[in-house]
Image (cartoon, rainbow, N blue to C red; front, side, top):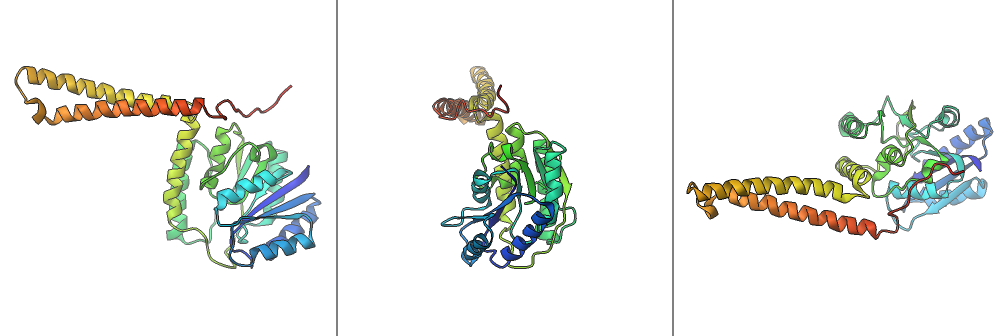
Length: 311
């Protein structure tokens, strides 16, 4: 097993990659690491793949994976994780905003301090305050509160992982922002943080727009729901459905009593329709829960659990 695997998702970064590779090689030589660099070309339309081929020809430590089209950063990371062979796996962006000089200390925190995952914290940023900094702070605050993980920068691309972590988690959609949350729910609770250097982008333009914050919150809700109720959906739908049924039945009883004493006309009362709404909603939620349970019971992964150790 190699000392380090560095996974680099790349999308139209032909200008940055040669400089990043030179920087990585210098740090790896100074530390004497046995390393590999896995560059995942996420459907680039420039010369990124040609650069990867040149790097591989010059240094066998460089491996390349090329997507036929752009799938997104999560897909690139998940594919890189599957290919990684290092006992410590480092992820960094290809745009030169992450510093390879941080790698030795990140590796030390994993190996010597026993962390499962160490996330970088770009305490001083050079991005636009209005477009990135302020939304990022609010996004990180919300994620901390919902997940209980005390990190300042969930979305930092510079992270270090124990080998077992990347082999035990799945990243898809746009879930790369929440890898610490996914790792925690998989049972890897030793999550640390390190202040890292943030550099200005030297080449190209950012690949992320404002829509990532909207999608980010939707993804967070998905992770929290799946983590808690993914294998037992009836616990969620049944609880909400029961509440709706109780409210509906209480409202219906009140309406019938008022009708019997002549206080209201049944079909002219808004409370009658509200009671029907709650009753029907409760029944539909119960039905959704039962269908979810049937899907889970017939799923091939219903009894797949992550095992930390065997004797």
